[in-house]
Image 1: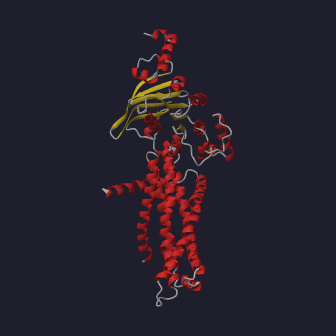
Image 2 (image 1 turned 30 degrees about the vertical axis):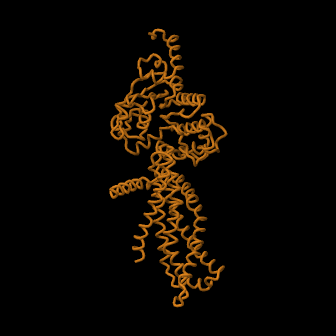
Image 3 (image 1 turned 90 degrees about the vertical axis):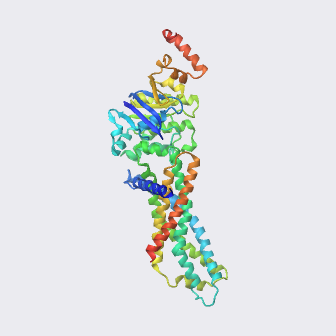
Length: 260
Length: 249
């Protein structure tokens, strides 16, 4: 479980995050949603320590990240996996080499064991036969899967995903979402996903934190989102006509008491 | 204004170097990466070094002979001047200025692109010291290989001069060879090697510094690689003055 308490961050005098508090639960997919520019990337980067917030606490199962020294941070990072928006695979390494990288850096496994573990991770994300290809030779969806395989190679306790679906087609997006959900449940990981894809929100939103203009506006799950009274959330999630109709339908059929 | 800005940059460079010169996380990975960098930065530069050296060696010989035609000048002067120009300046300072363009821009753009595509962030998140992991093998690899490039440069420059003597009638071969051997000072060779080591460090570390702190996109990567080449060239010339004063006086 990761707890964020009263986090404040500003850049050049402009406050991006205002006193944000949130709890990210273990074994669940925790979604941070919000418009572009609302501060969700800053929030996720603050939690992993790529950006240092001015105020607040970040507790990884009770361990305060803000109080740690360099070596403690280094040790904590071995428990963290992160999936970047652009996958961030190493161009100079093959697909297999990318997944083997964290293993060869941080474990004392033999080369054969490392290879086995890397192959297992690649199979887990349903990627076969691309071991010797370079990242530039495979599609965007495959790159995302390689990045997931690399992120889970060291059996992380915490998995961070920065917009895992950006630039992917809806079908591939759903596959990636389901993969993240399955992995989270299977290995009991605290997964934090930063997204503005409504399919993900309604599909895998087990714990949703809505950020609007730097404030935490709403917390709930994918079922509560239909009945939420928050105007900004409603406008954001059900932005187009189709989603509005879906919402009406769900409300009438599943929550008749909530229809005014 | 310029002074405070350059001091600021120098301070950041020093802090960056502090992060680069730490003990590698895994020695095995460090050695394999260093070998890879030696092959990429060093061995792949040999063709360029050879081509440039042959031509410049030939040109120096021709120029010397054409411009020193007085009967009062001793017979060894052309060979001697060619040799000393190559040993003192061409094989280290000028060669490193050329390599700053090739190797420096390569390092800066490679690391800059890694920064822009979040690969450096990915390394940091994994708990790898990215500065050390990426930059130290390049600095060490290039430093180790630099004397070999200098040796290649010296040898092929003399070869270029020899070709002029052998295949044209500008200067007799015997006279050129006699000049090459006349009044030889061994210290000049060491002086060239010592200077080249300093320059190789400047090239790789300055380029890595500019690449590592890129913000933005393709435009900034291009700018960083230009800045890296300009800054390292100026530093090489500056160091050349200082080292010459220290080593030859």
